[in-house]
Length: 370
Image (cartoon, rainbow, N blue to C red; front, side, top):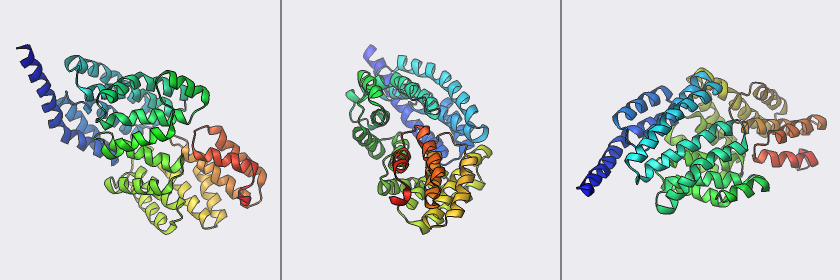
């Protein structure tokens, strides 16, 4: 009798999970396509209709966080995310008590704990990123060891392995003690498995890889392929448009880059207030980069100055590249003292992007001589 009850409970979990997939995916696709109101509405309904679905609570918290960031700003979004996590962590604990052998529920519980690291990432509190990430890492690693065919679990493992591999030897030492493998190549390969073979993690894994290829590893051909795929799948996502445009610029496909940048400006018009404030200066940076590539230094300088002055993005990746661009312009204008100031500003950001390596190079030798 006990075995029959366990079978019924297990089968019910699968039934609820599968029934909820379509609706949960609609909510996920909505927030990746910058339809934030729609996403929150759908995932609110999905939480009530499919409370046993493994990812519904996690994606609901993400949708509320993204909605808040778009309509109320970054600081408020941190508060909303923290409040949402306090709601869903007990929910996942209850689900684990009910279904202790469900690997997906365990994964999203661990991912919920790790999501706290996202707040620290935005503030560049690197040690806290590792600490919070570790809270879920051991559980996710255990899931991966027992279910190597479950590729969603490889994404968070790959992130920690990659970014810890970028950090100092001191940080890597403690990461290894915690069971993390600080290995950039390993992390990339694990994220690629999630992007190619995963289920709910495949979109985020693809976006993370495109980010890495563009601004950390400078593998622009791979960035172009991934960002084009993402842009086609989510045409209203200004982030995917932005990554695709950036890859085109770095590959010197300037005509295509201009056309895509025009699309980004059209998308910008329809976005919520705080999203416009976030993305407007970033598009100005890309416009400045195109003018720089075309040799129009005065126009490029005007635009990059505007981008830096009005910069309000959560992460400072493009701020670093904007300072780098301005330093390059000043070098070409034989204003070496000003270029050095900008390269030092890039290095001060300490954000592990390739802009830092380039700035260190140009501190030693002017951009003109490279």
